[in-house]
Length: 103
Image 1 (cartoon, helix red, strand yellow):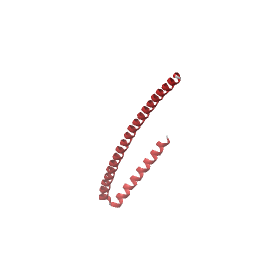
Image 2 (tube, helix red, strand yellow):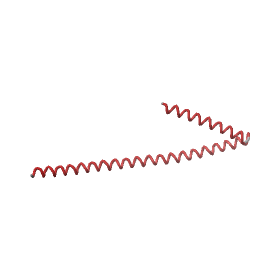
Image 3 (cartoon, one colour):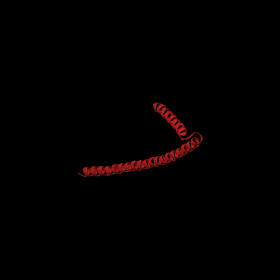
Image 4 (cartoon, helix red, strand yellow):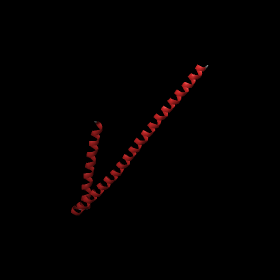
């Protein structure tokens, strides 16, 4: 009877050690995933802020070009020239991105 009790006590200790090791691993994975998720979200917010600033800068540059062109050739001609340039730029960007995705 004593041997059976000893085996049960040993199994109890082993199960506690295994449970503690499992808890430690789960805590480590949770901490690592929390840090990675925080870094990714921070990077994403910085990226969005940078894109918003770049977009605002591009709008101001285009507005300045429009004002200079409209003073030289009129508002309608200026709008046509800037519109055609933007469409060409968007087409080139789309085609280059499409070729990059194929590779």
